[in-house]
Length: 490
Image (cartoon, rainbow, N blue to C red; front, side):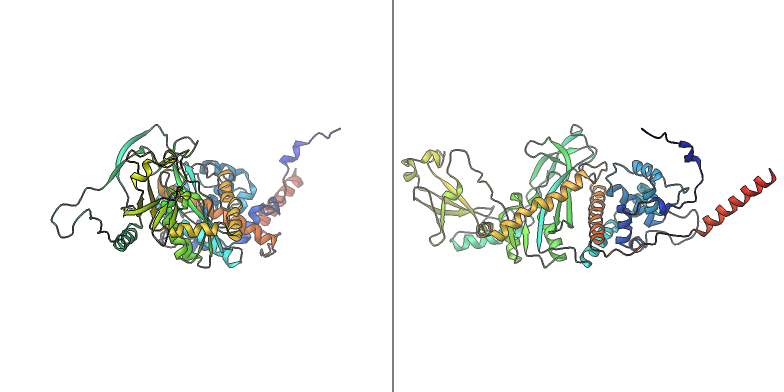
């Protein structure tokens, strides 16, 4: 049995306000009370003209709330966002627009970005304000930092590309490494390495080292990403840090062809300056390099790292089977033969070489080396002690447990960002525009968590359910008076 719906009621007049049309448990109600959005007025100060002439611009708070709606609910474009706001009462209520008020055109934010917000820190201020509110409420636990990178597919066809020659970027720690190499060579009685250019000579500087890369014609600032079984594509990479409670603390964005370990320095410097109380840094195997381990340990923090499989050929002895003797500064092979120190190369690796006469008659030489000179070479980085110390931490239960939390923290952050907030790909082009998207996406994720936690802990400010719109009530009374007069004289 059923009751046939009378659709004639849809044309009846009702005295209602937009406040009553928004469900009391809607997430936007919690978000609206979780933070005072008036801080946006201070963030955009100086970006708007003070001269009162012409048509006034849209309220900055309403403008940014429109953008927040897009990233809060993972709407694919601004055009679609405006369409959703036009028919969604909760969205209208959140941005402060009434029932009959026309929503701004979808190109409004794009024009404002180009004319006002481009090359400014207004988006970063929004992110920081939300994060600072979470810190003030005691929700952020940065005792352990979880750092990883994720790729965002760029709006660029992989076939529309060209090959270009670019200059190789020097390592950020190159100067420190060169000093360490010279010190190590001097300790072994070796001469300093020859410089590429003698300061006293009048010879021209050497040509910079170059490499050939594939560059997109439509988005040159993106980079080719290819990992494992993934298909090659142009992408951006966002190296991100979060705390134990999945609050996003900071991030750095770069082209997709940059390795995670290359971007670590900038991110680590930012996060540590923000949260000096952090004690443990959990990273995956991509960050397990001598320089990064040295950087973490020298800053009096503990790296929580995984086991990294030795990169040796199948059928050959693993690197850990060659034991380093610190007292005699030599390497012992699996047959207990000594590999003596030879030199320290420009990459910072000490080279230990075996005696060819001994290796030639070794019964397991085929498992040790395929060298035609019958000589095994084992390399050891000058910062290898930091790698060994990180391995010792790896066996400690407390740090092993922290590393396991990565699947519940930073990996969960990336999963939510891509599945719920549309960060799997971008329709924008250029590093700055994509950075704006990532900044607002992470700001919205923090905002949702902040609002949810405040509601659960009962610290959201109360809201007034009943609001009297005097102007609307007067208009409705006038309408009813006219209706009665019409009926009286009819």
